[in-house]
Amino acid sequence: MSGDRDGAPKLDLGSILAASDVTIEPSERDDERAARLANERRTALWADIRSMVLFFVVLVAVIALAILCGHLVFFDKTATPETQKWAQWALTALVSGGVAFLFGRSTVPASK
Image: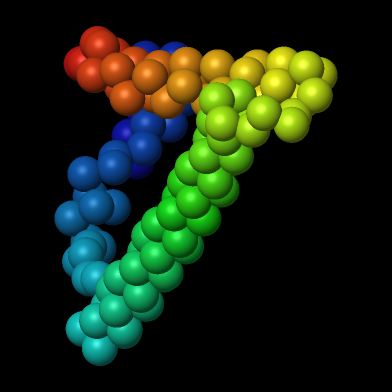
C-alpha cells in the first residue's frame, strides 16, 4: 500500500487480483444438466397436455350448452317464454363471445 497526499493509505487492487487465479466453471455436471433438461421437458409436456385437455373439456361444454339453447329457442314449442328468454340470452352471449375470441386475437397489435 502506498499513501496519497492526505496520508491515507491506498489499496492496490492490481496486485491483489494478479495474485489470485479466477476460473469460471459450470455449476452442474453434464449428467446433472441432462437430467434437469429432461425433467423440464417432461414438466412442460404435462403442462401442455393439461391445458389441451382443459381446453377441449370447456369446448365440449360450450358446444353442448349452445346446442341446448338453440334447441330451446328454435325447436322446442313446449318451452315457456321465460325459458326461451333465458336460452336466447345464453345463446347470444355464447355467439358474441365466440366471435370476439376468434376475431379479437387477430387484431391485437404485435408487441415490440
